[in-house]
Length: 108
Ligand SMILES: [Zn+2]
Image (cartoon, rainbow, N blue to C red; front, top):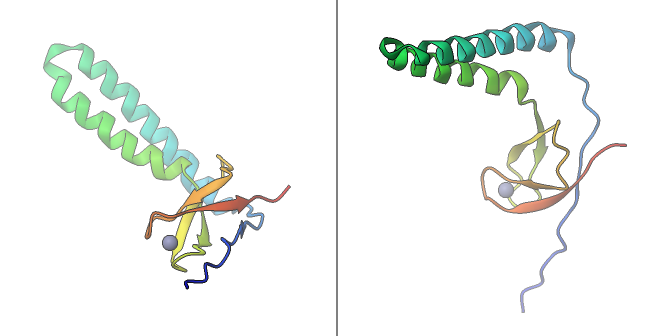
């Protein structure tokens, strides 16, 4: 008979954002937001729709990594490293490698 081990809760240690991260993320995030707004305005003019969409996509690609701060934890199922969003504080995390869910305990 298979002996199923209980699912391990992943404990997250408090992580402080480094000063350099703010220095990098904030300008990139603002640049991304500016591209999204610029792209939106371009889309309002009929000629600018294509470059406008391109600008919005580029802006989105800049904003996402700038504001999504991943917290690396190791998955209790496959031991691969997966990233949790430190702003969401989800009660459960999903492993990006094996797609299993596991409970997460955040620091108070
Ligand atoms: Zn996994």
